[in-house]
Amino acid sequence: MQFDYLKHVTDGLDRNAVLDELMRAYGKDVWNFAYFLTHRRELADDIAQDVFIKAYEHLYSFRGKSSVKTWLLAITRNTARDVLRSAWIRRVTLMPFRQETTSHPSAEQESIDRLMTQQVWAIVFELPRKLREALLLCSHYGLSMSELAETLQVSVGTAKSRLHRARAAVNRKLMEEASITEEEEWT
Image 1 (cartoon, helix red, strand yellow):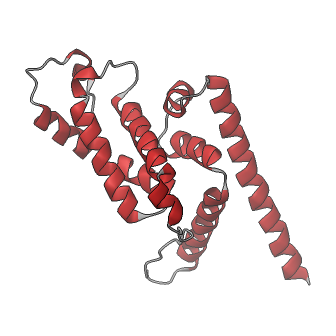
Image 2 (image 1 turned 135 degrees about the vertical axis):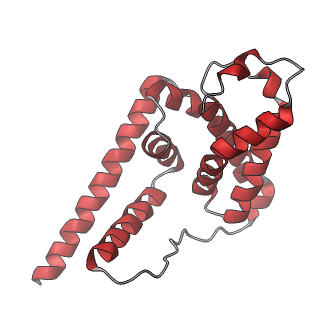
């Protein structure tokens, strides 16, 4: 869905209708990104709500320098950072990420795929926050390098560097785990 008309909005636009469209189009992406950054469902709910409130309040000031998706993800990132910096959240012990599994008919390939997915997500969640963000925004949300740089508020070169380091770290960890598994098999 294109929101090119937002670049030219005036006070006469029905903000409620636009907010409804934005929530339908990007609500899931905003919530997923908030959850990825915080690892807590209740915080992701609050952050997603705050993001759309901020978008509603600043709808007339949207300049269209980036896509609406990039704009909303940048607001999500900044809101999540503010929440994670708050004194209250720093006193609360965050539980480690645990991938929930659902029961499916047992098939070997489904089981292997699920284990591999869990392994990759566990590795991604172990990355430093800066690398995790770059990897997620590029790989999962499909942002271009310029959009990635704008969302992270860094130069394009820094965004490329973070993405490269994140991919290298995930690959290195997967290779380490694969070599450990092979050694255990032969012992």
